[in-house]
Length: 80
Image (cartoon, rainbow, N blue to C red; front, side, top):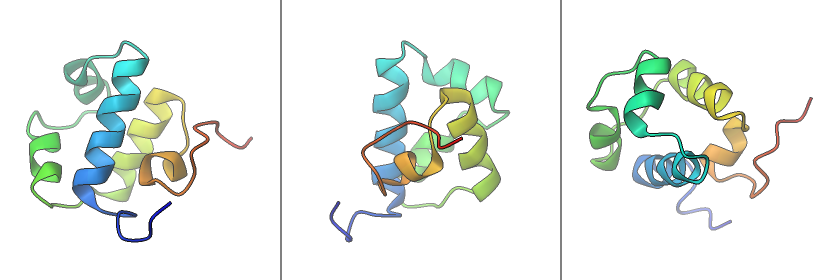
């Protein structure tokens, strides 16, 4: 993975959106379930970082790893 995009908020937001869409989960449902504000993705797309606990809640809800959402791996599986 290209080091320039790792930890880049817009990249992470797009990765979350794409993965959620692939699992037929709406962003609205994801945000409600994770107790996040409706502008979360808009803020991320404009460069604001997300708190680590919010990212962890999203990963748990999507049943994937935080590393996957950050782009550190292409394998969404959670190492258990």
